[in-house]
Image (cartoon, rainbow, N blue to C red):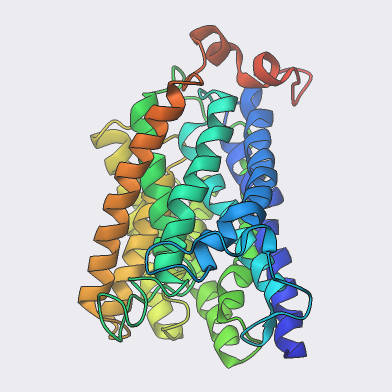
Amino acid sequence: MNGADTAWIIVATALVLFMTLPGLALFYGGLVRARNVLSVFMHCYAIACLMSVLWFAVGYSIAFGDGNAYWGGFGKSFLNGVTADTLSGNLPEVLFFAFQMTFAIITPALIVGAYVERIGFAFVLTFSALWMVLVYAPVTHWIWGGGFLADGGIFGDTGVKDFAGGIVVHETAGIAALVLAVMLGARKHQTTPPHNPGYVMIGAAMLWVGWFGFNGGSQLAADGGAAMALTVTHISAATASLTWLAWEYKKHGKASLVGLVTGTIAGLASITPASGFVGPVEALIIGAVAGVLCQEAVNLVRNKLRIDDTLDVFAVHGVGGIFGTIMIAAFGAGSWMAQLGSLAIVGAFTLVASVVLAKLVALIFPLRVDLETEVNGLDLTVHGERAYDHSS
């Protein structure tokens, strides 16, 4: 065991959990109507708890077990055979388990942004549970667990390069978000502005800080590679924030706080897969393009395709993660065949599996709340609470 590496990954684990609780919860919560903010908090918090238990029970074993090239198996279920002295590389395996658990928490939590303000709570928990176990965990095994898309797999010794989750996290969550948005249909109140842009900014700032653990921690060591990953992450986020802002001002004549911080998230999502393979100049380019590309993707999904992906999960996370994955090949750090092929394979699998799971869960629990509940807000009707004395 390496003490310095272990100490850094302990910190990184806390940082990645911080991204979901409270970062993502505040970011998403501020963007909805005041009468739905607690429902967003509930979704994020309950998903974090449920995914933690499921990752311990079976998720970690499916993702990082010693099964075959497609499925890790159940040999490490409930951390079977793992003690405080068991190592994964030069880290305690129980710490590697905990670090990866925070990724398994935030990935289904990202999907929350697509269905807020109109979805059934029981559906959310059931779908998220099945999706993490049957979609996220297998894809993690394929790419990070030595599966068929990794080094030595179907693409040979190159394998796909996905440092911190452009495919594993952002593509899978983005596609699942798009699936649920299409199946749900549009909200009845689509033009209501974010009820608390201050929450959005605070949440985005927490995500930015937490992302240092997300990307820097994926080096699994306290070394120059982790320092470079952290640095390029910051440069991409800052640059994308500015290009989003400039593009928004050019198109609409106003520069908004929500736009600025959404650009931050676009830059962070886009650098995620490449953060271990590029330098600061490449990060500047990735961020500069991401701020415009993801904003145009929002316009495409929302206004051209008329899909109510409420908080733009696919346009920001999905498109950003896919773009960053492609840029690894564009900068010569990965194989075009491996990058594009893996995006296609995981994308198709996620699409089909998400549709099937959503349809199956909808047979048991209602996908969408009734019209009265949606109009009155989910906070009071579903959870019996309200965030403010005077709900708007």
